[in-house]
Length: 362
Image 1 (cartoon, rainbow, N blue to C red):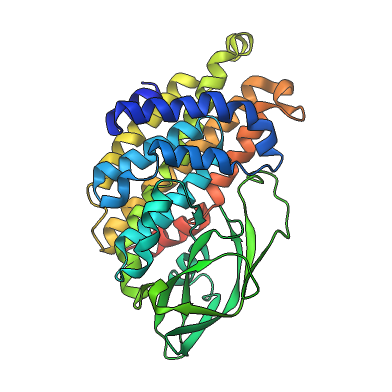
Image 2 (image 1 turned 135 degrees about the vertical axis):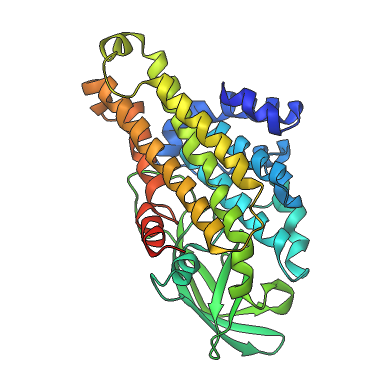
């Protein structure tokens, strides 16, 4: 079944049609520029205005699926855009689920695409798994917290964009808050160039004695909050991998000459699409349990995320094998998709992160 038809299952038909039209008419003509580093903020805002980001605010399984399916539509064409959509969706997810009401004043603008933002939780997710320490430190100061630290590679950012961060206090407690990028206290800098996903507004964030006001605190107890949002955080990423896999299958089908010569390769578009269908069914089932906070449920979510990563990698590799030397040329579509698929496997939670958690068991 085509991804656009699947979107119709979870999004109102008018929203699905507008999202598909934005991808077809505005996103696809700019794939080369985005791959070279152009940040598609106008497209991201248009997707928000179309209703791509607002449905999971209610915390329902249906809302999660709507966000995932909209992301899948974009991911068929461009993983950079799908990843930015996930960043936006994840930030909305935190704010809508947060303990404190203050940050929710930004929800409407973020859900409509009028404001953009990133997640900032790559480091904390690793920290909660014992992989690395929390990068932000804070202490109580007046009506909030004084914060300092460095977050590498926060995406979907630009001056004035917002992102979440978790800071460690001297007494060991962890606080999650909302920060605004730009300015002296919260500066951003692009200090690396990536082999893919360069057009994602990815920056290093430096916080030098920044002030996190109480009205911008999402929760004063992040250790208790993260288990409540982590299943949704991970499940939302499904749109990236599923979209890429479906896009690769379409690319292989469109290559009639190459497909005929590759008929005996072990993985073709039909098998890719069948695996994507099965994974989408599993995503729908997992979404029903996203509010569960036990470790066993989270490990099942991670297994699903791992299987989506494998599909993205194997599908992109299959396209490269089909295209052969034509896919090995600079600017080749098959090679772009291969580079993007590798990102699906390394973005937090990465394959090595997931396999470490699974090895630890329940």
